[in-house]
Amino acid sequence: MPTIAVIDNGLCNLGSVLKAFEAVGAEPKVVRTPAEVAAANADGLVLPGVGALRDCVASLKASGLSATVRDWIAADQPFLGVCLGMQALFDSSEEGNTAGLGIFPGKVKRFVRPPEFKIPHMGWNTVRFVQPDSPLQAGLRADDESFYFVHSFYCEPADKSLVLAECDYGGPFTAAIARGRCFATQFHPEKSQAKGLQLYRNFATIAAGVAA
Figure 1 (tube, one colour):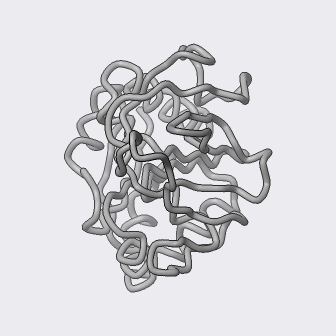
Figure 2 (tube, rainbow, N blue to C red):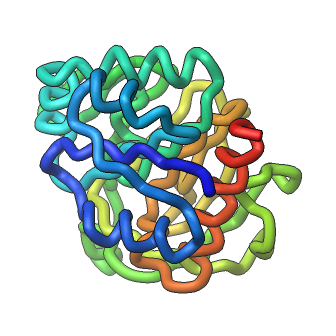
């Protein structure tokens, strides 16, 4: 059973994420400081989040977890960012001209769409995986799986090889990224029923493989 450290920065659906990992046979542990991450001896690290990126980044910096996340990803240990946890990985955001963690080059941009596309983008939408050999996609179809989104901003990676999945909402946008054992999704797997659980199961399997 892999141990998954889940960061609590006060900006996430923590209970739903914990229950989802428990449902797929992982042992989630809530962490709030670098010391708690170290004590958890975790196989994987998860950064969920909803709300404002400025608050997310400020919380990570105040707790010291911004350096922990950077070091974890630099060491190619299994990492999963969810929604705001994906946006935080990039250089900057148009939301209040906020600086991100700068782990990956790129910007978080505000949706500009025709009036018929309401913002925030909220609800189910189809995702296309574009890295067919990614272990995060195991058991999921490449081009017609639906996941649940709630967001007004989207990530635009400068390095297009980061893109793991795409979605359309009045135009294409990046729905997930991957680099080594670092993954992140704009959608919420914990709100996406069976397919979301499959994605969390895949991440737990990746983490378990590292532990083995």
